[in-house]
Amino acid sequence: MMALRMLNVPVPDTLVELLRHATDLHRKPDALRFKSERQWRDISSQDLMQRVRHTALGLDALGIAAGDRVAMLAESSPLWTIADFGILATGAINVPIYPTQSPQQVEYILDESRPRFLFVSTARQLKRIHPVIEAFPDMRVITFQSGIEGYTDFAALEASGREAEPGAAHRFDDMRSAIASDDPASIIYTSGTTGEPKGAILTHRNLCFNAVSSAEVISCGPGDVALSFLPLSHIFERTVVYLAILRGVTVCYAESLETVAANLLEVRPTMMTAVPRFFEKVYERILKARSKLSPVKQKLFDWSLPVGRAWARAIDQGSRPSIGLRLRHAVADRLVFSKWRDVVGNRLERFVSGGAPLSPDLAYTFWGAGIPILQGYGLTETSPVIAVNSVGRNRMGTVGHPIPGTEVRLADDGEILTRGPHVFLGYFKKPAETAEILAEDGWLKTGDIGSIDADGFVAITDRKKDLIKTSAGKYVPPQPIENLLRLSPFIDQAVLVGNGRKHVTALVVPSREHAGEWATAEGLETGDLDALLASPALLAAVRGEVARLTSHLADYERIKGVALIAHEFTIDGGELTPTLKVRRRFVEEKYREIIDALYRNDSH
Image (cartoon, rainbow, N blue to C red; front, side):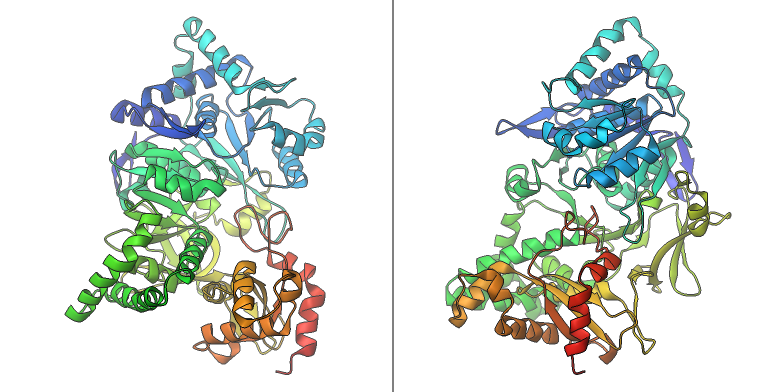
């Protein structure tokens, strides 16, 4: 193991060493947990290490060698993690592909990375990308699902490794010992919000350092339980799993996105990672539950929210809440907020939010309810964590301090720059694109505009390329305003537009459920929701919400026109990347006629 400057703990040289160290140290009966046939089942530390060994030996028997590339198109599960470590143990490079990516995107990644093997999860995924697979006849496919005719399955791969083990007693150790810390571990294709995806090359050193350094901030240990539901093809969740294994945290894999709410109650995690959209959905569910309460309980609920936020703001600002506020908060906590905690299993000590900015108001709301959210920040190119808040140092509206062993500073134009062992090698086969963001002295341009306060907390304003520049020369950061709008129960999604225009407008996807309930209360016809979404009455109600939520903004930031979009922005529809970021150029092009009409019809 190596010790790095400014990080006073040993860092494993490779991810395989990280796993070996962790499984030797913790020896847990429930290192990993998953649900099968309605029962939660355990994989012990010893079984995890043994299955990784057998997977690696099975791949070795099939001819995989150090430096080869192996792609993986699969939903998150223990098999994803076992396959990941098995690939890495041979010295090969894991190329993860989002299971939601279109066949065209899958083909692009396979064509550029040219993997020798492809892991695919299910028969359904195979059918979806079958024409793509046929275009790569030299690529061998291994399926997680057993019994698919014509394909080797994962169980058979493990069995072949198990059979090979007696005759290759030292082969696994020889393979893992040959891996160097600066060898590539993974090529991860970025979402491509503004162009074609780029493959970021991350080394064993990058990922080991990031897991160890982040663990120093997010204090956790063998007594903790984590529920994992974000895709492991995203480096955020994958590094969190590495971190959890390193610290002996039990990792429970959610069955699917649809079952997260039920799985929360079953495993009762103490820690969890999520994206802001998750918290917005939880809050929407809580607001829906409020609507079913008696009038008295609704008043109590409405009284509790500002009390909780005021209490959280006082704590956040480093002051002790007044006696009166503490008493009111105690009442709100007992009668209202304790029910919120029941929804997330009543043991959560920390939520870590990443992937996009989190609304401070929403963060204060959850913190006031006894559910602290630690916002972090990073990029695929930084393995990924650059900065993160901690339980003891959590400042709302920021992404915390840089993790130990890294450097962060601001460029003259406010762009965040970072340097350290977390910074990637470069983009696969794209030296020109690499040179655009990675300087020879190691400083990486993040593409994000931000600030660093006197206490060292980093705050993100917006993506540099996402800033809207009006025709008056004013810059408007869209993401914080979009976060504000989504606090309204009327608004499910919102995208700001206005580049080169005289003012800012918004495309809004209303909440169909709330719109229906509102229409019933207003005595409007609700039989045809599409017709309701096109009604002047709903548009007026949404405009009122937009004006209410943005009244404190500068005049040039205020939204002067709103258009309702009947269909949700989705990955399949092209509006969102696999990590749920808005593809703004695509949105502006797809809804060009609607946007043009907004500016023609708007009198401002």
